Amino acid sequence: MAISSLISTLPKAELHLHIEGSLEPALMWQLAKKHQVTLPYNSVAEIEAAYQFDDLQSFLDLYYAGADVLRDEDDFYQLMWSYLSKCREQNVVHAEIMFDPQTHTLRGVGFDTFMPGFSKAIDQARSEWGMSTLLIMSFLRHLPEADAFVTLKEAEPYYSNITAIGLDSSELGHPPQKFERVFAQVKELGFKIVAHAGEEGPADYIWQAIKLLNVDRVDHGVKCQQDSELMQYLIKHQLPLTVCPLSNLKLKVIDDMKHHNILQLLEEGMLVTVNSDDPTYFGGYLNENYDQLHAALGMNTDQLKQLLANSFTASFLPEPKKQYWIEQINAA
Ligand code: ADE
Ligand code: ZN
Image (tube, rainbow, N blue to C red; front, top):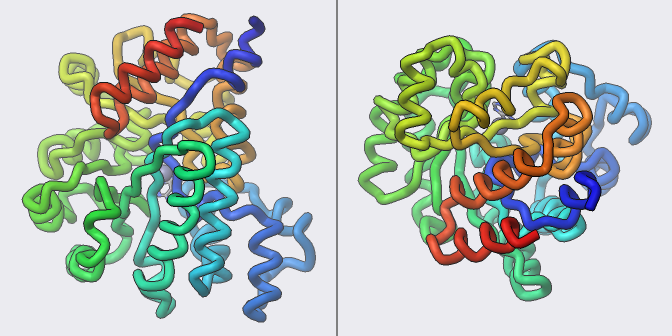
């Protein structure tokens, strides 16, 4: 079977996806009309054309502005439903989905609005096609740690719906160290922990995420090659990296997909995975990210199968479920 067919038909897990980053321009346009929100665009095509970025911050400015059209429970249902339907189309059988509460609570949209919207779509996808989904609540790191404590408290009625807590937004100048105390509480509460580190920031931020936040996975982490001791640590402990190739290209972390280091990291024995991050902003969902690795880096079938197996190994699924999916991949 051609590698493109394997990419589209084999089961996959996605571990690094911001639900707000899956807002399709057409849905943004429709919701802006519904709520009479004025967008700085005159058409859906203009929204699409605006998605050209110089760095992480230039993307985040548009991403937070775009999220302003999400106002009521049905908007969040539609947002989640649209992503989960894409998963079905692409054979993504398991997704660990990040959401940014502060992007909404700061606008007066509360947990009692977005959580029921998310849950309705998640329950429907589970009952209609057996999709498995976990939620990761992320703190915005450009805000003070005190605000993260408030968010953690506000989330209390929804703890049973949340598997992990993460850290995202503007990396440079906001090291993991800034959130050491709140993640100590997160750990005590028994959540899994993830953090964006080494996307634009240095290898030292990855060390901080490991040593100070106790992360179970590192989101991005592509700057780990700056530090050989860190590389050895990541290999020895099989600490997963959720890598997002198209995101790295669009945010100019790399200048050409041909220079992406994911296959080098894989060959060195690191537990790397492929993810889409913010698919509507970066020009592709999960399968398009795998396609790019084949087109630009010559990813072969063995490497593809290893990356697919890694997506389950690095997930927060129970062991028997991981084994089930890995066997399906190996048998293909
Ligand atoms: N929030 C959404 N996408 C992000 C990314 N790639 N890095 C940091 N924060 C984000
Ligand atoms: Zn991300």
